[in-house]
Image (cartoon, rainbow, N blue to C red):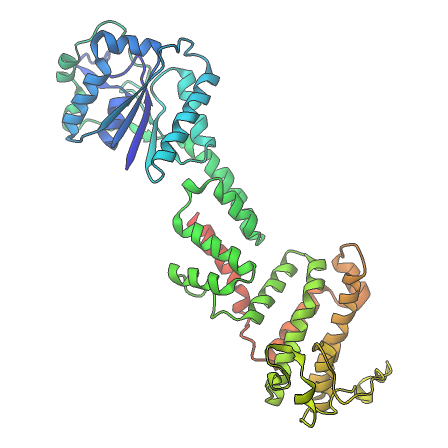
Length: 447
């Protein structure tokens, strides 16, 4: 549905061609109706234009004639302001137009709403341009140029519209279309578009969604859906995100959902955003999963065979006893020459699985020295950084972390990625790590 909101002015409905004296040209109201053929036309009358309408029905009659000319039935709705005398006051129109247009949008949420910004007083035109640029209800302002490229004649005397219509030059074949979309309507969109792009580039999808809600009328349904998928994915609701992306038909933006892989990609984002303190706090659960998968892949074990039925990270003492893991949880001295091994004397742990349990398992089960040393190094990094983040009420810079651990956060993260690809089957490759950036690229293409 297409709806036109139009004040009427002294140059409506028709104006005489003073240059060639050959006939009349249509004012903005009729000319927009001719070329856009709206389903509904809201005509806004002030006291002055109401008086003119009562004098000779110039507006209502001309609207009947344009409907006949374009063979399109238009529903005409009059908005009358008989007490509106001060037509030069901008504030009056800004508030009144805003209320009217908001209600129209509420009544017709899917309609295209056109604004005639060439009729009425300067205050009316300015108010509509401001609303089109700042009101997030998707308004399209249309301007109509005069044939002579200068002000039209204003007629307040009585009119004979039927006679004038016979001399309407816009009815002739080859008559020039003079209506264009006002560039001003893009001001708000372009401003918000830049904000959206900044938020998307920094992976701040929740904030981008809030910004998008303020300009939803300007955004495509595909953009809104894909942004929602990005929000869900960044909140680890990856199955819901995958479903949306699949329905949109955007290939390569998300592989089959995998909890550990998705968590790693979020760690990627924390590094890219320099959210180092958040990264430190988020490392621990991933390192546990990393070692868990490494143990399973390298030794062809299924650790769930040794844990509680309803919790894959909680050891079951009965299952461990007498198993291949029995007695394999102590540190091996040759790998801890600088630091004395922990003096824990037990054959197997109880309770929650911890990353050092798995580190010790790798020491005892593996003959791959590089694998063991890399595991111990990552475990040591995670322990120091976890304690640093957990017991200090401050944020950390790249240099502070390097001074503490000997590596920058970026270097630590790449060590983890290398370990992941070498010793686990976690579905993360270099290309996988580009998926959020591909989502960002697709979002920006849809703007």
